[in-house]
Image (cartoon, rainbow over all chains, first blue to last red; front, side, top):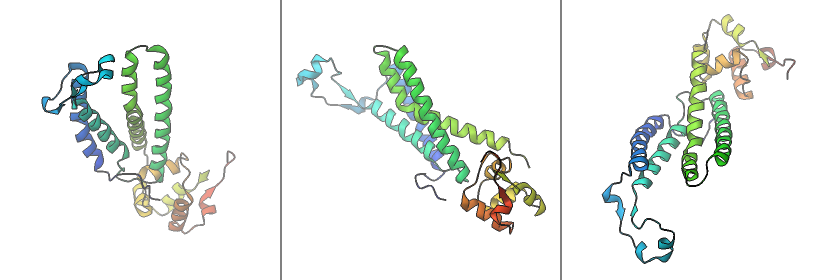
Length: 153
Length: 66
């Protein structure tokens, strides 16, 4: 039985290679206010009243867009890469892991909704964009690893 | 569901890896079926039974939980 929504298994490594620099860039952008100057767009924001009222950044810099794009694509590649021996049992573990990741993700979101207020909640939503994929990858590979190490002849 | 894969595999002198390769699945899958952690699809059940020249009913039986 062929699962059609999967990428070839080498995408696990391509994804890792995309993810690591993007993650480092993302951390620098988020915590050190890092940005690449060449990614700054000329902005018309000064003339636009709405942006002044809401005190939006007047300068648009695309470093964070670049970092998030890399992180999401890297995580998607890793999550959707075929295992070397993808079969129906591994497909079942894959689906269970996805189900588990969605559940944990929303449980944590509900908890955070009641515990985190104000601007901090924007951080919660930011991390929540990525946690489904992260939880899925962790759970899927943990189960695969546990199955491999429990093999006995 | 119970099965006799492990017995038949021993009778044919195959390792889990040998059987996995013949059927075209991972070794984990064979191991999970033998330890009754995984119920295979009809396609896979037919392939294994065919390899051992048994019917599916001879290789797989319902248990009291099914």
